[in-house]
Length: 426
Ligand SMILES: [Mg+2]
Image 1: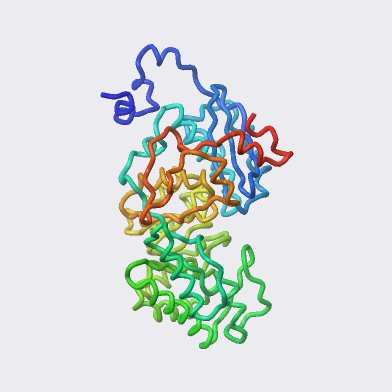
Image 2: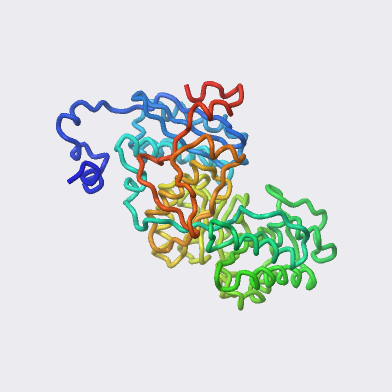
């Protein structure tokens, strides 16, 4: 039996799995520092230990303000054994909240798993229960050409190009209605509220006119005509819908067999899940109803899951509290017949690695995670360990290197650091 097999079978962190000599000589590993750098627009967390091993985590690319929030947790976890992931998390998990205030806790959790895997010499998926699948399905919510307008034919043109992408995506998510300020702003007189601000974190909201509702439905019909039944179509549609508009829209698109409609009522940065309202919506349509990317912590999924308020959940590992947290929620959702399609568009390349390890271990209610991309493009040059090409026929092969298996090319990455973060890799 190989060392790797023995570790996988008998528990990699168990002292009993190590040869006696190694057990005696292995000193307890301790966290000595917690750092955060903003690389490009991406907050990266580095947990440093006293044994020359570091773990990396990442937060959503847009959260350039995260550095002080990460450092807030430093004194709470320095001195702890990072391979006791859960014990470390118990010290900080309660000090987080809905998006964006769970991001620092989440990035730290992912960095802890990276260390635990490196110390054990196994990929993170082994620590999370082992593989259910050798390749993981992703969905495309971000690789999208620029719209030339807001008429149905423009939607058709864009999904045509997405369908032809070399990644071979099997599932595409498109923004419509309140999730797409460009579409809403192109419809004067087609919905009632003023002023129109739009975009994250302020969400537009209000009642649609008949004309407005028809226009949104027409954009979906145009996309569906291109994708047919070959590539799945999901919609990110809110938040901001009034209940009856939401029901009428869903009924209108029912014949189109959408994968899901996301965040119609609450979502993105809403600091609550609103399970009762979602349950009302879900009971009135056959279209799968999806929410969850802004929600922090398993407790805040309790109502949505136990009331079977939605059909699909989509927490983001970089906001929910990490990959262990998301795994727990997925298992509990599975017990209640609810699907899992994690959010991830802005999670970056370390985030991509975290998604892959997690998705490999999820139960069969797993659908696909949202494929994150390196932003700016040079991010692909400062890390190593990702497959090439990353996506094949809409899937990513799960890799076997220790930890998350994606590491910095330190010299190249150093060149991208701002003066403020100059000592990040030292
Ligand atoms: Mg969304």
